[in-house]
Length: 176
Image (cartoon, rainbow, N blue to C red; front, top):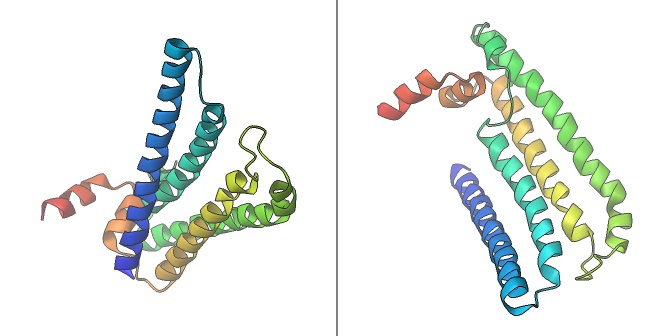
C-alpha cells in the first residue's frame, strides 16, 4: 500500500512539473513569437489557463496529503491524544463531505461541461472541469482512510505531528 501511495505521489509531482513546464513554454514562446516575429500560437493562452487549473487542483491533492492546507493547530495542541484524534476525525469528516460534494457536483455538471467546447482549441470543457473528479475522489479517499486509521488508533506519530503542527517532534524524528 505504501509503495502504491508513493507511486501516486510521484505521478502527481511529475504532473505538476510537466504542467508548469508546459505553461512556461507556451507563455514564453508566445511572447517571443509576438514581439520578435509578429505572430504567435493561438492555443497558447487558452491551454496555459487550462494547465493552470489542473496544476492548482493536483497541487491541492498533494498539499492535503501533507497537511499543508490552512489549519488551526493552536487549538488542536491544547488537547491530549484522545482530543487530537477526535479533532482529526471531525476535521476529516467535514473534508470527506466537502470532497464528496465536489465530486457529486462535477457528476451533475458533467453533461453540460461535456457538451461545451473551448473557443480556440475546440476541446470539450469536461477536460478542464473534469479535474474535480480526480481532486474530489482523491481527497475523499484520503480523508476516509485517515478517519478509519484514527478510529482504529493506527494514526502514525509523524502524521499526527503534521496534523497538530508539532514541527519539533517532526524535526526530532528526522534526526534519528
